[in-house]
Length: 533
Image (cartoon, rainbow, N blue to C red):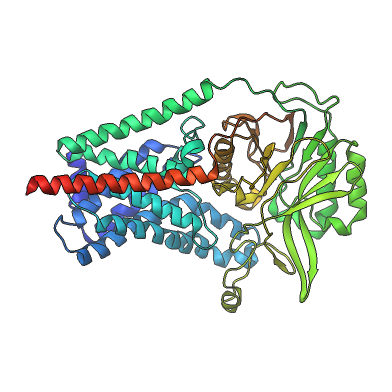
């Protein structure tokens, strides 16, 4: 392993930055749909050795800043470029208008997100010195960098280091106790610490063995949590989830509106077929779910559509569908990306408006300035999308209240909680048709799984082109429809388990990790300096 370390230790100049970018790109293979998280056993130690080679132990603080930031930025750029390239696919839906903006997504976005990694490695570089505690410093800094990225401005917690385990329900279980960023620290420390094998010191080898032990403990804890759980009885409500796989290029064409709506109606009328062996729907209320922005017109201005929905449903049934909602305010009309709950009488019972809008998709940051440069949002509306006020529960005609999350709202830790209320299930409706057959829909699917584990609630995910699925409270897939499949799913709603740890306590877990890590570093350095004296 020492020979491998020397490749990185001896690199300098542009070679060092190129190696950092390659290591970041390699790390992206840990993400869905590949999910090859063992690649981090090279990516993170390689990052450690690059920093070792760039920062002599006794160098002054100012001399550490530039090389640390450069290495961290290059590593982050390679990681986000390889992990988020698929965002550029959205700019090809209406290529005549937006293809020229692809570089903004494919290059500028990773470059911007890499600033957080650069900042994190800079902080680690300021604390860098010989000894195993530098591995702890880097893991902690990378965790705080991901936390900042998930919270600064509107936040973008996509592909944080915890998501290396997102494809595995087993390894993802610690998110129920540690939260997303606690799991991020576990991933970062476990793989950074493997660099200790090349240190040639007893302390380095010990911390590397501890890192392997942490991974085994995480896997064992996940297996115990799921294996010791009692059987969960399904709830007394039936679900029908409709996945029509309508191409984004065709969905909003005026001549296709009637056809699109008829497709949803016909798929919703099909005879019941039980997916999970939980019994037929006889006598149970049904919740029929259509994906995000399923209805390609303003529902409240189309009475015939509401009448058709009423004819589809029984008196105890509810249709939950994504749709654009319009409102009139001073200065013109505004639009909301919404979820409607519609009763069997065709009346709209309630609606939820999306709180976290997608930058450049549903709104344009710094709109007045960027429009002068010719930039516009991608979603075609005659007005602007307005963000909703807050997350809240919706009630079906019969059955448990549920918490709707539209599109990428499901990736935010803690977004699946409402103060003073606990839903019977989580609902994530999305339209991943924007991204075609790329890795994007697979990542979105795996990231939503974490909300089910985090909350101990079933999560119902309905996507236009897939991947649609139902997760149980442990993140196990109960039923699924793959990407591009035209079909529907019928099953009983899985039951819930008792919530283990609240959002506040999960956030405290991250703070406790921060305090303990800093304490260990201070003690280690104090003891080490005392012995040297």
